[in-house]
Amino acid sequence: MSKKSPTPVRFDMMVADRLALFVSINHGLSLSSAANMLVDEGLRMMEHPGVLFRTGPTGRRAGLAAGPDVWEVVRAVRSARGAEPGLGEGEVLALVAENTGVPERLIRVATGYWAAYPDEIDAEIAAADAAEDSAEQAWRRERELLGG
Image (tube, rainbow, N blue to C red; front, top):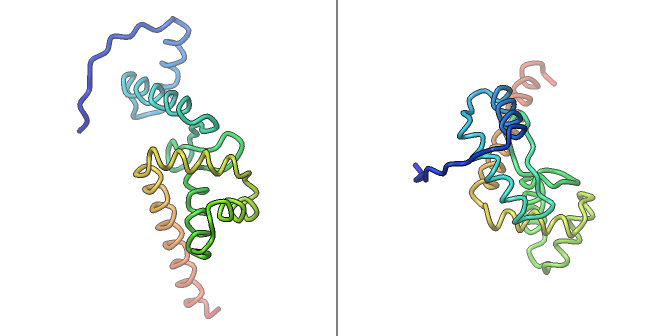
């Protein structure tokens, strides 16, 4: 468990009202945990311009403001590196940009974010890989049952 420091904070009324509304529609978050999460995300966005946070079926995750989630870009970079281990950095960036449609500068934003928060992004990649494997196994079982 991470050590927490009590930090008294006074919010403007409009900010406090918006924070309370955020908590009311994000069940399971306390006012304190929501404020902590949003401040952390805001600081990360300042550290990594071009990254934002979005909510989805798997929870909140880092994404590119003008593109896919960070984990998707990092997985594409790993795939390109695995398929073409002899390519240089610029060539890998160009290959991923060509295959994904994500500009090289945004690929660098995503890889920079991963470099700062590898455990978070690696966990998202692992979860996506597991979900895809599970879906493929279910599809194969259905094909086998139906004789297709």
